[in-house]
Image 1: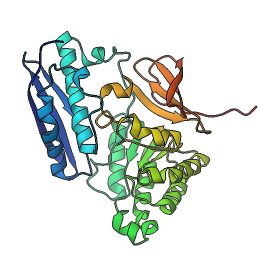
Image 2 (image 1 turned 180 degrees about the horizontal axis):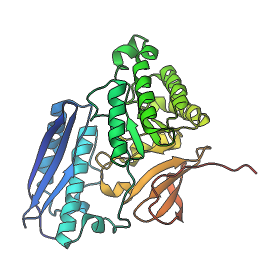
Image 3 (image 1 turned 90 degrees about the horizontal axis):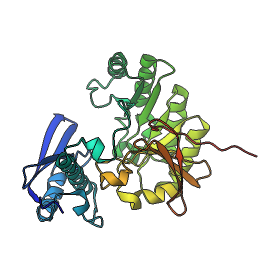
Image 4 (image 1 turned 120 degrees about the horizontal axis):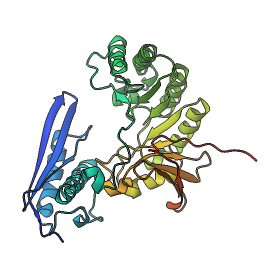
Length: 341
């Protein structure tokens, strides 16, 4: 017990672009310590985050101690806005914990193990000119800034209306033109990832995978809605992507271990992307867990732990860690394969 409860909690939302709103939760303790966490979400009604904050803030102010361990791990997180606010509160409490000890946040979470982190350029929202030339210009800007990996979400025209009308094949054509323009701008060897934002049905996703592979896309992300019922479809799409030399990625907006479990056990993706803003707490990310990849037979998952410089081997059936492999400096991106006897 620190004897230092919360005294104030606020939520601030900043509109960065018409499509981008950043949300930050700020707390202050009785001793004057302050902490910040991020609660940004997309694809939700503007009032949803405020309603979630109004539900969580009163009981947060009643916590006896402003420490991460004070958060109830069984607190219900029924929606993405609630999970975002809860996760932001967890982040802010870690920030306070680090300030209380007089150390950097990285030190409080286990210690800094690197001076640099590999990143890709997500050029989607900064591209206001949505023509192929506009995407290419953004890619060239990112290339000039030193990036060697790029991600875009180019399928603007593929939406619920075109899906309902059975017109997704036609609607994806402008997106494919944007992908081709970016590929031409960055050259043939640099990594290009494409986020589909769950816009397709299964037949359209199959077509998109085949056409994207011909352009040299490294991974396809979230091709269809991420529901448990869609796991067999995702597993089939994953195999189609793998056969064309691509990865299937997703699960960016799932909550807690229970949310990820059916997608892990079902072999839905090569790469799972837990987001600290939604997952339900920093510690659920393994204090540095990065990419999750599955063996082709779906029996094992490998989790790259960038802070502890090792890889956790997870048995999919039990969802338990069965081994840990020391791999050296900052494992982030991992791939799996199988050797036949």
